[in-house]
Length: 510
Image 1: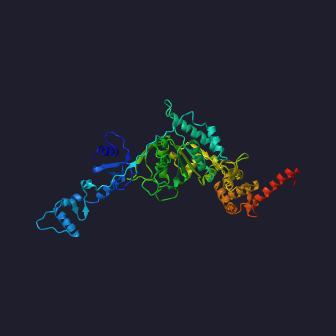
Image 2: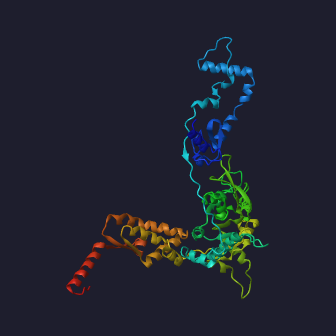
Image 3: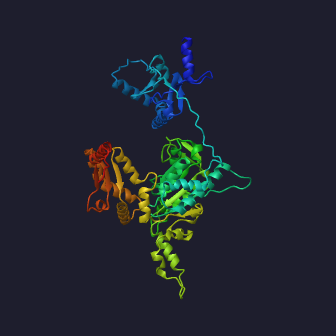
């Protein structure tokens, strides 16, 4: 071996204190070190990844080779069967050389036999230079004030003024706590949030917008799939694993993120059931340590723990948990509590007073949530409770046209690419909002309604290049008429006539 080969060998094996230039490649699955992870180095320059090593050891552990080799009679019988299978005959008095090398078709490989060129040439894969990722350092002066957070939310979320104010203050205080750590001898506790509101009121969209504005990792989990440990379903720690994946497996960045657990009302205690409640009260009890703050081991890149998945330790002390749910039938529980407070007399409140209350959820208390099926220990770790209002017709009209990425603006952008101007009449927007209210699914109904009546327009407009403008009317929404379509050629002819009249010195009039 010349000096150049020795240098290459040192660079590949990482000896002599030099930095390795090439990656190790697994001898079995041929994956490089950047994909397979840690490698086991065997003699003759053979590398085996952790996964293949575990699979090999599991396969080997199924056979008792030592017990077979310790019995001469069994070994002799197996060797004879092996010789007969391969057509080999042995003369009388000839002893079997190396009887331990062959047992009934099972070959034991000696790594020294591969030294003469049996090993395939090592693949040379350049190692990627590790780029130092800048860690987001929270500075108390760089954290936006609550009114600035709310002003940014106003650009995307319509209405829900109280909920936006509560979330802005809670997030601001939380990240002040993360930035300062322990201030003297006073340790600031977490302010986890419980959001209660009807479906389609903007709970998930509010959290998504908040995480995008603050540029922090966000994980959105669904509580319906969570079960007690040992049962089919996602483990409770899987919500932290999703946050770790959202932070590109950066533990430090994940420990300063936000976890939004949707459909939290689905893990309430099941009433009138005789089976084991593996997805109800037991899940609430298992989430107590996550909400309060504890070091948990979570699988990297998987939802459940197993022997083949590496684990990472994440401290949930500085992770902000936001739980949201529609809590159906909670309104009736609130009304029953309020009716008990009625009295008799001239100034007494009538029992049917609360039946017509639209925003009854704003009067929710911890007692109502306990009656719903949430355990007191779980509610104690969610000190901030904010409610979202149900959407009325005026709010739905504003949602259609005011946000930055409003639904109408999206369709106007799509038709603008075809050089067509799309407009909506005011009474058409009111008709869309009235249809959405009947579906009783909140803002989600707006998209389905617009998709329905815009289908024919999006299909027909690319056929005719003369169409310049489309106006959606109330009659078209209600199915009693059609949209107003302006032909581009007429607009051009009017402009040409104006230019001609100006040239001739005559004023153009209708």
